[in-house]
Image 1 (cartoon, rainbow, N blue to C red):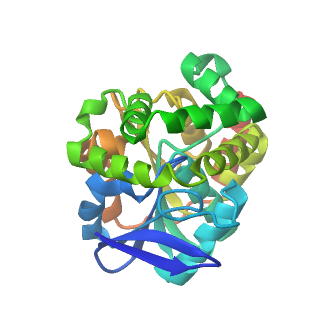
Image 2 (image 1 turned 90 degrees about the horizontal axis):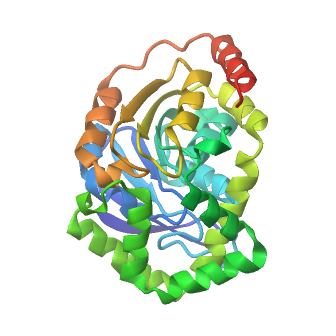
Image 3 (image 1 turned 60 degrees about the horizontal axis):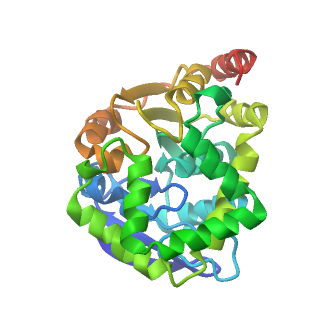
Amino acid sequence: MKSLTVDLDGPVHYADFGGSGRPIVLVHGLGGSHLNWLPVGKRLAAHGRVLAIDLAGHGRTPSLGRTARIGANLRLLGRFLEAVAGASAVLVGNSMGGYLAMAEAAAEPHRVDSLVLVDPAVPNTRIRTWDPLVVALFTAYALPGTGAAMMLLRGRRGAERLVRATLALCCVDASRVSPETVQAHVELARERLASRAGRDFLAAQRSLMARLIRPRRFYRMVAGIRARALIVQGGSDRLVRVEAARVLAAARPDWRFELLEGVGHVPQLEAPERFLAAVEPWLRAPEPRRSDAAAPRRAAGSARRNGA
């Protein structure tokens, strides 16, 4: 893995896992980084040139006067695809990165060949299915004073405790994540504790929530995506419930849905072999003829009537 930086109105860090041919761009989730793809990046390089971006305010991409809000990072992703990927890409997005991948495919279809959506951030239309801890946590982040206080407390826990707490929330069994991957995350967390990471995290979180509370707008966006897609969903995800992922799958029956039972929010970290077993055959398969665009639109309308 090479660590590289490109100037896109400020430094943007990314990891190059090697490979050649079509670009495969990996987009991390809220509070994540290029390191979220360490266990799978090298294997994915058998299928194309693999690049893992650090979004603004995340990883080793400082905000530096930029904002970490969703709209700004969507524009940054588009510029990265143009300047670095240089061709229509496979976008692989986890959580917030899955939302950004879909939004980019809707906004600039010529830049996106296909999508792999890994526990993508989607509207949860049935609030009773939310994990109580997740509801409490994200409600606290949304409140101006409380959110800032939460970030201060997170910083005081130290890098190792912060990483382990995050993995405990995102995984069913955090011990499945390799020690080398955990240590890489701890080292990066130490770097970030000295930055404005807390403010950037809150900006990204609040802007993402503001978009997800508008399910009709979200599903209009989904209906307009022309790219084919694979949805990979952890069956025990506490952050993006499987019920919400199934609504997305129902809205686009032309997209493939793979459920990984007993896995949490970050399958590529917790169960990399199972993640690759789902993704690699899909990457190898020839692209089918594009389906009638009216079909997913009709399905999206049905999903909205059922509570989306």
